[in-house]
Length: 363
Image (cartoon, rainbow, N blue to C red):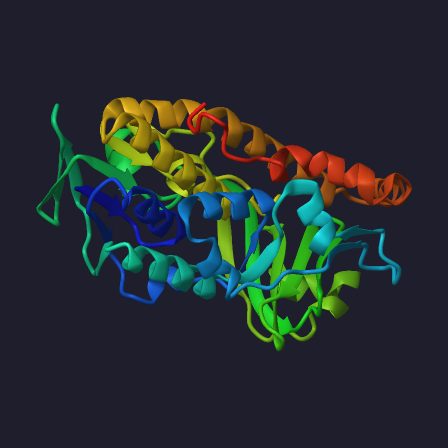
């Protein structure tokens, strides 16, 4: 049997990944609605390909929206800096579409896929400790034995703290999340001085807004007095999410695997947090299929994932530096983006979106 700690996106993806190899029980310390926190999420082509490996793509696609383009703007200018075509163009380039949807919809789709495979999800069940032996694990708090345990309990993972002994690092940034009027058929990125805004459709009526600003700023109230203010005037309520990271990417400790933010929390400036968790799950599935429920499978999983997540984390940090340039460097950035055009900008994200499962599955 497998035990997964955490019933968020990473945990449900892990449960789907392991369901073909044996019974899976997911333990969630919170109630049934807690895992749906957060407004929206972007599923880039690499994550779509991971969902295909997991066998959950149809579930997600039914509740997702496919934007027709990404429009990049400067808040004080009416004309966009650049428009990147999505839709058929991105499928042709990367072999998969780009989706946006609410976190609740993604969570519901993954939950449906997990339950269909016989996964058991137990809410209000806290895993206090994982005791490992040469042959398996015992999860204290749930009093369960397992061949392998997957820790999917987020950036503040208590399982990782107990087994590895490290802690996340605060970045000084806050992602303010809210909903407002629909963004129509495009995803919009607005780069202001020292902050940025992302807006995309959740449905025909609502759009997801993510405003990223330094913790020391006054958040949306302060940004409202900048040129970006007119773009967020329709958002009535914001929820702050402090951004923390895991500089050390740790994927396994004996018979315990770490997945998603518990393994490699990174800044969200490439919108790849959930995508990395889905990729993790896809590779974990193939590693366990090849080597069984063993520490060797988790070691292979770790070796396969670590270079990838380190690269994406570094690219995300670099992207943030570009997004948040102060005046007058932001003017130079804007002019450069106009000159480069969509093809050159897409080439920068080719290493992110072009990912697919290696031919041998675990290399």
